[in-house]
Image (cartoon, rainbow, N blue to C red; front, side, top):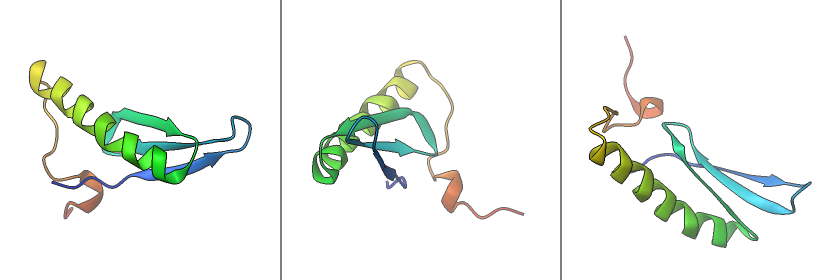
Length: 69
């Protein structure tokens, strides 16, 4: 399962932020793009674990990739 991520440079904090549009609870930071993306996998896994544990519904297929009518 893959979820699209957005990595942006935050000039004021001098770091990179990674967010998942389809999983708003999954976000992380890193001093480099590589570090931020490495942390992103853990952030996504943690957020999805939270969804399962709390029986929260979510889309298995990311909304950004879903076919809409």
